[in-house]
Image (cartoon, rainbow, N blue to C red; front, side, top):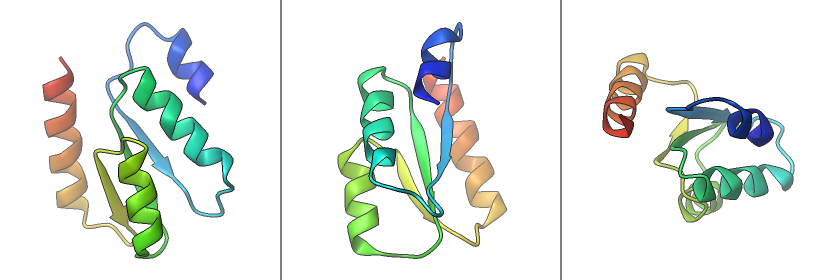
Length: 84
């Protein structure tokens, strides 16, 4: 996934769903942060450790499913506009 982002001309935003994730997901998050690519983390449940880890790795926000679509759209629009 991160290698795909590296090979593209410009990635404005990554939305990462961590349902069924393994510990490698945090490495991918760190790689995105180091590439200065903004990303959101989607979590299947609200859990303090997941939120802390996501923010520590550079997530702009950790969202818990089910999502409020208006909130997601607002965040995406805001992050994409700020990355340009």
